[in-house]
Length: 337
Image (cartoon, rainbow, N blue to C red; front, side, top):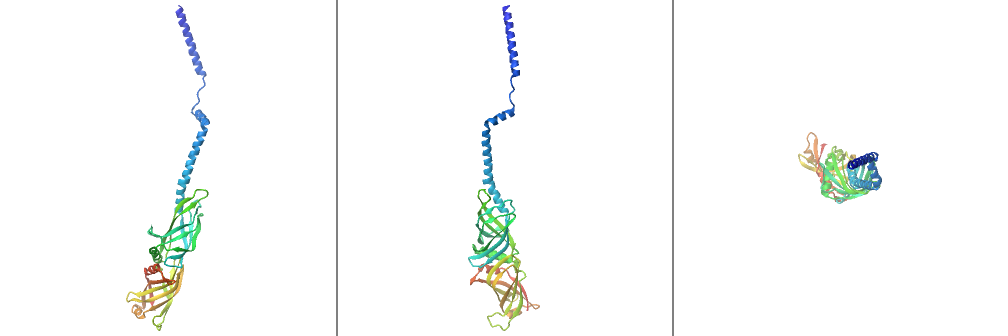
């Protein structure tokens, strides 16, 4: 009997304990969700996030400045171009020449950097290929590349001739071709605001008109002196030479060899103080001709003269690069005799 009562009391106590646990679970506060955890984490460790953000920002900024900036600078320099408005080659010698270069730098970039002065080699470009060595070396002045273009050039700069073979090839191309292509190449420092200085390769190719074979060459006002003493000019006239380019070329005194296909050499002609400028040029020309040979070449009243350069002398010095260039191209001149 007492055992049953005891068991019943224990059951009542157990039920009461279970009820209290259920009630306790019902009134216990619910734990916070993911958002609450994030807020508590950020509030507690905000300084860690600030440090990480600063590190990431610094890494990105450094990559842009020291990796991206040089690439952007080099790309923009490569996209620029130099257009020549005038080129003058004066006071020539076998070792140097005086250069005046008037040009316009085209800048398609949104930036306006400044390039330090630097020495650039001037290379002849043939079929898109640079020559192995430069023609001359040019000291380029400081360049501030404004948008969309800016005036650039050098004035009466005495530049050394680097390679005689290359200046000969260049002079030959200028005389014989309708267009000539050269490139200025060098290395310099680029400045843009407060950004770090960037070293860039400057490489600008320019295409401009040549002399196109001196097409249109003619001799006017021809006068023959059959009584001229031997060894003196017996022919005078005016040599008319068109120059379709923007080039000015000072050569000095030039001697031309004249021949016909029928009889061969018939004499020589001379032009003194020869400086070719843009447009039509007229020079007094004298010649010593073998009129017997000339008359022996006449067909239908016309003697077709073939003319090549022979000597180019400036200040008593033979300029072999101009001599080779003039000798490489033969002019045709029909003369009514």
